[in-house]
Image 1: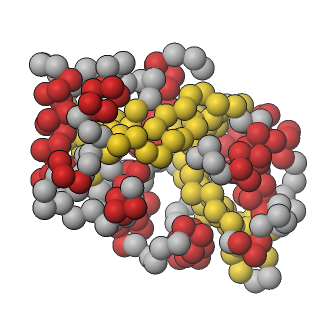
Image 2 (image 1 turned 90 degrees about the vertical axis):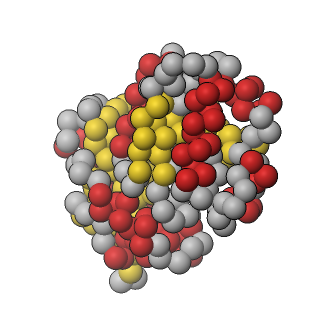
Length: 265
């Protein structure tokens, strides 16, 4: 899995699994924006060449695109990007934020290592209110219509997994099948249910679904500081494909921008 092309293909699959409202091609780059707090879905995928001119012109056009949507420009920086892009953004005052590990594993390995689920797992083809409420509760935000709409726009094969205990949903996750791969997203467990195998059961159920869809490999994205998630994914056989991060424009570069989530950066 080494090299620019596999990383680019996985990240573009992940982008298709998070369908945003506005996408503007810029050469090989993709400028993405969506309403609501899901900033991680609305970033530049700066893969390859932004077209005629140089990288600076591409950055300036991206800044204009995001300013038009009253938010700051953000770039996803990975081995699939031009090598000069990250230092150029740093020179322009962009902040380095949100390190992520992109990981992958053969579906058969995940199934062999995780075994049977200790809790009852329900799978749905579309997002349900219970699934969404649990995901939002773990992520510490109230329900967002924009995020719900993003899920309902998705037209790829999907599975929404709910671990059920005590008559309620205690853990969730979702999977998206796309050209031979299944991506895992939205893994979340309520604090009171942690340590009881709920997340393992959700991941195992998604792996069985992936195998039934005929997808030989799985991928996911995890923050390197999330020790419990890293332990689970390592036990399941996932290995790092690459590390990547984001660059976000400083607030003074985007006068008049409304960007409440980014206030924390």
